[in-house]
Image (tube, rainbow, N blue to C red; front, side, top):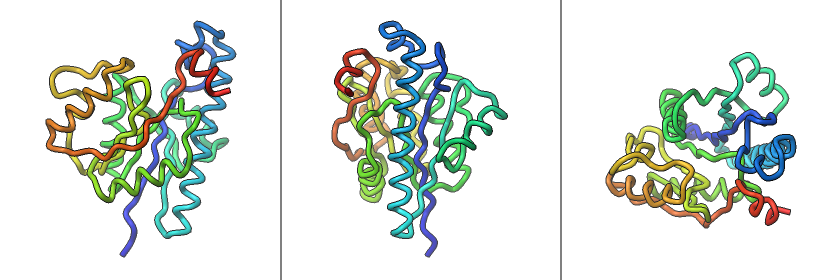
Length: 215
């Protein structure tokens, strides 16, 4: 039997001064914040490529997809040619929830069996984390990686699962960027009749304090 398609989708902004890590840029400057974004992005891509390499040995391939905001189609293609990714797509407009859901809908159209959504601000993410998330998806329809700041660092699901409240909230919009994201997302999962598998807590990098811990 042919293995189901799997994707790791890494969402990122174009790492140019003034276009990324704006909260961090307030403290350390736009140029330096953009350099931090470059390092984080390449770390996340390396983890995804390592996971894909290990999975290939088991006959279970993983596609690495970069979803970018801040670049047009031609510029995306040129940039993708310099990166270790299988594909590069646009995020489109809208809130984070809208953009996340758009990637899930794209994966559904492409008959992807399992998709992991991650950001480009994860200084400690590893291939083992991603493989553990895919393994959890064999036991549960939804996988969530809680973040220390009240959000989540990973969301994994089967794209054929239609659960729109995961990205819109069960009782009003999810306050993206705040400390209630995880709680609202888990409440939305319950409202959809889902029991998510939870991964170990992770830490993203948004503030100078986060940057100090990374060093």
